[in-house]
Length: 393
Ligand code: PLP
Image (cartoon, rainbow, N blue to C red):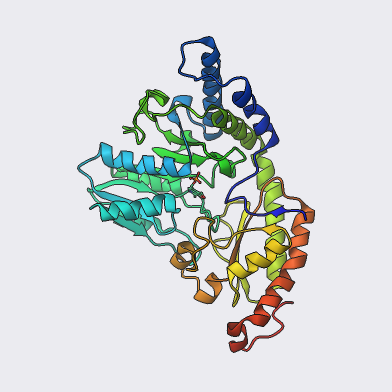
């Protein structure tokens, strides 16, 4: 059975070009970049090249890039650094729809005596910047808001938010794990202090990420050890991962246009056809301010997990809520924050596409989904209670 992979916000296929770039660093070029000998030194040179490739995607300078192990490490490091470098300040502002890499960390910090403000979003997942302005106090160390939401794709106005934070002398971090490579980012045009990226969301492997730290930003390392990354992150560099991420960023920079047209067209077709063919279905999140590859659709009166199981039988991969929250039967915190009604939130499926998806795959999904929903609604007591029948058009 062919796999139709529509779960690219969970993780992506490693691009062939990325794999090819990485392979020599497992086989022949396995030296330690910190070694004095030429054998290790040549790996160091390649890491410098990769740093430049990553910086180019972000419109940043290479020395502003710190390699980490993942988006979670980058997010954690940014918040903790702000609190370490501003020890007199005990307040952190985030939104209610952040990824657990920020959300769970902040819950933990809350239990350690820090004050956490979680900004609400409206029914479309949009953030009100007036609420942000009101939330910041002289005690605020950092504001951290995601650039693109992993569940709905909704884009936050982070550049504007960073300006507002700066006016009050507050640091600003953004989790750009889902945005990077999908929408243009140019750090020269904004005042964002720190930004997180994860390799496995943009066709590089798992286990590599970056934290962008704007030149001049005080930084306190999270991993303390060797002098790697100019003392900003101890630990021998993941050379193959770094080389792979560099190549992936280079590809993303040149494919961005394609992503914005080809992937968006496929996503829009999938969304339009599913909404047309299946009654009581709707998109969660703003449909304009959105990453080009993501659609989150609720099918009322059915369980997302049950939909996923039937899709899985046909080789179709997607998510209900975010990959990190599936397994729990609670509707996702993102949909709850948006006030999506319970019967809708439970039946939500996130489809996230990539440049590797084809029109035939999308047509297959459009063809199969109505029968899946009809079958499940036929078994749903809620659907029957609501007096519905023949839900699929
Ligand atoms: N932030 C967002 C928005 C994400 O979607 C994810 C992963 O799903 C992360 C952070 C965590 O990244 P990683 O899996 O590299 O730790």
